[in-house]
Image 1 (cartoon, rainbow, N blue to C red):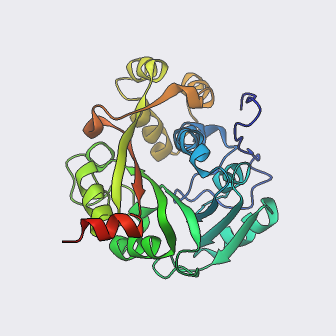
Image 2: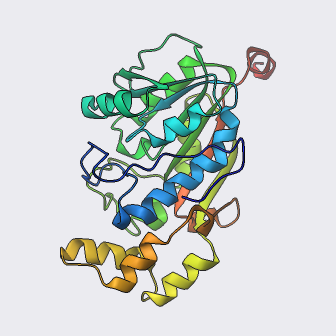
Length: 273
């Protein structure tokens, strides 16, 4: 990872020997060369949105390996993580002690009403069976005016032409309209909907590897054979700067990134006839 300027959050990147969490396909683990594309694709969202957590009491709902929660701890007043996986809870407590980890169900968050200012939920909602209930819980524990930051694979490009997700760990994937409807149904106001796209260098790698850099990686992983040196080198060289977030062409994005706000009491009363 390249050096960052003072005040910019940085993620720890433990090597495979340092990370006790297995690489199952359910979560992204840093420090593994073959996973670097997916890690950087997730990391870019943290780098874009972590500044919104400055000085806040933050909940990361489903922090996975924990590197993102540790990035948030660089700027937040306090970071709490909630995960149902006991191995993830134990790993984060040991490796990232700045994060207060709680074991719990995201559909029944073990937090008091209006107890956090910001909730981060990156690449998690697609794993949940009751997405609407989870969002209602987020609404409950957020303070009025608090923000919910969400990222999730774009169903249109992640599992194109399918009714069921390609990823066996996903229960329901969403497009931008469906994500907006879910958030609004839970009482949130969606202020921003952007998408993660390949930047110029990744577009070149798409062309180099037969039209899709992603498919080239998936094909090799499924084959269970050593990766070609050229592909392995290109994957290991991917950086955060190779991805861009933009509102345009949302249906062509790789991942959706939403910022949703819990209306203040004043705003709610004004909207009520």
